Length: 275
Image 1: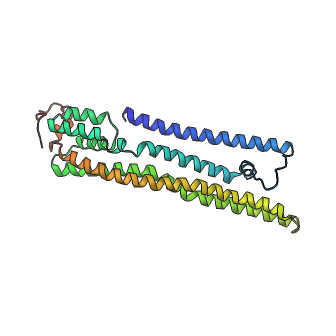
Image 2: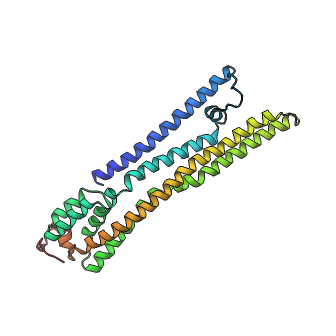
Image 3: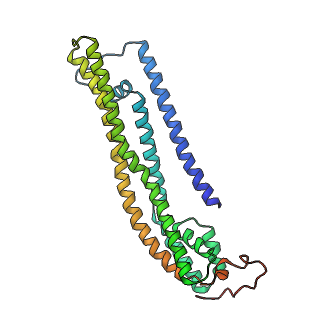
């Protein structure tokens, strides 16, 4: 694993570590505020005025925590896709031009150095093709197709968590709503059906607030999923075309592609050999 791979994985770990710390901080603050509110009567709200923060704190339960986690996961994946799914990371014009120039000059050692120091779509495909042990044009093209398919699958896997969050958000909100309605009607039964409409409206508003949270989680997640999936499809198709063209410029002989260290003690063909 090269240094770029390690840096990329470390950045992902930092994303999730920040998300976990935010969840813990939000939960501790909400619980602390709930405990503080239990010690004294809250000030009466003006008629017709409802504060979202009060509804959030009053409806804070396990479903709220799950929705917060889903929201943080969705936004973490969003920013990760914003960094990964872009032209410079998939089909960089600089890497393409440099690779074509190296192939035109027959500078395979320079091309190997170029792709080893880069971690984009094109470089990953070219690196695997240049290290492919088989000889022949068909074998080389098959290796390029497999490498490009693997890169496309990796990119699309980055987007998929937003689809999962977008579909689970409303279901979690609905589960919280059903739970709140169960509590509201249980309270109605305990009072012998003498609960006032005001008491029921408070319970129902708390229950429906979970539905609102679920929709607020799902809408940006599904919008981001559709946006990044379309962008990934467009960039991956372009990258596969460019990668196919660059693979066709590589030499058929594996010893030339892999360099003089690939077969110790064996005579190596000239570096200027062309396909």
